[in-house]
Image (cartoon, rainbow, N blue to C red; front, side):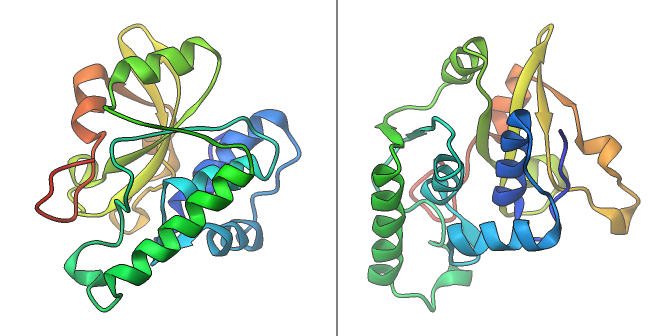
Amino acid sequence: AYERQKTEFTCGPACAIMTLSTSGGVESDFAVEFGMWREATYFGGCDHFGVASLLAARGRDVDVLVDVDAPILGLGSEHAHYDSAIRLLVHREQEEKAAALGVATRFGDFTLDAVDAALDEGRQVVLLVDLERLNAETVPHWLVVWGRAGSAYLVHDPWSDEDFGETWLETSVLPLERRDLWEIASWTEDETGPH
């Protein structure tokens, strides 16, 4: 089921709600989404271990694929008032929580073959992307890749910009060609290169 995020910063929890909705019984009101955000937050948004923990704590089998054993969010100048040691501490706490919940983590190169393999197994992929390539906003963003139709990946993007007349009809069941999904499937806040 599609879920529109209820704030500008709860895309991760909205994706978790969408993923959990396949097994039924998940509520999607503001209190639930905001509570999930508080559970997984990492200096404004939710990092990969926070989103993974949301799902694992609710009984889902979760794997994380990430290219570095380090924080990938909260590094940019807008977060400079947070000391890097504190960011690393919060990151490690999220990582330990995820591991305690049974989340399997693999550090390595990301490829769309990993997305294909997950979809072939009947799984969904909660993917961190660069929203700038979708709507010109420079922020990290979570979305759900839940299927394929022909050469297109089927994506639920929890964000629709209602201020500009966009509705959920434009962001649910969003078909993205392989090259387009690859183009957005990265995020960087600093000079170290995209993750």
